[in-house]
Image (cartoon, rainbow, N blue to C red; front, side):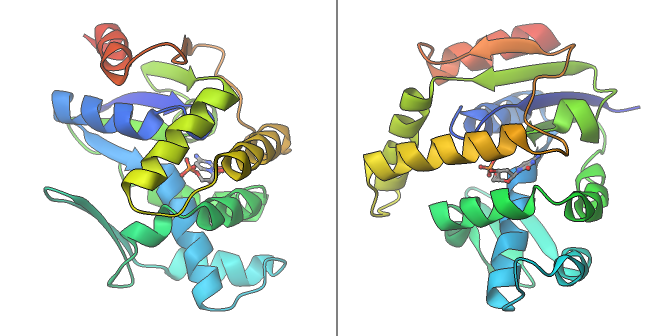
Length: 217
Ligand code: DC
């Protein structure tokens, strides 16, 4: 069985950057499960499927052709179209968080996530990787940071990408999303009982990577 390292935590905790660096370092595959929820959010917006139409969303989830290309720059293709930039929008994350609270939709996306489990190993980044999607993972991390710190990081990230951003709006957004992701009935954002808890508020990315790598090695 391939080795799995799960990295769960709230949005903006640095999971994506840390997971990518660790996957690169170990030569393992990388699953960005949030991108799958985000891609589905874009798909239903594009196809004008109502947020309340669970059946329609499940159908779209099963039918979407989603590809992750790992070249020099990571690209995500949805039905052949490059959606990399659209994935990063706050509005996409918000819709993703809303549809992610629906059990049927989570179930429909499970197989797509399990498909990433290939030799030699997998770094799985999300909210329920260690609790639901890969409960038997050998290594589990719960990575978090204060809401203020996460908002600052998200703000800088968006600015760097040339996307217009407002810190107060991002902070409010992050708090709203945290609450929705943590309080939902199904697969809420909670640390797995066997996860190592890391608060990265006062840590650099390199420090976090070092700490996680020391667990695995
Ligand atoms: O990690 P992210 O910000 O890209 O995720 C976007 C939303 O998708 C997040 O607010 C909740 C949902 N999500 C989830 O419910 N479960 C996951 N494993 C990953 C993301």
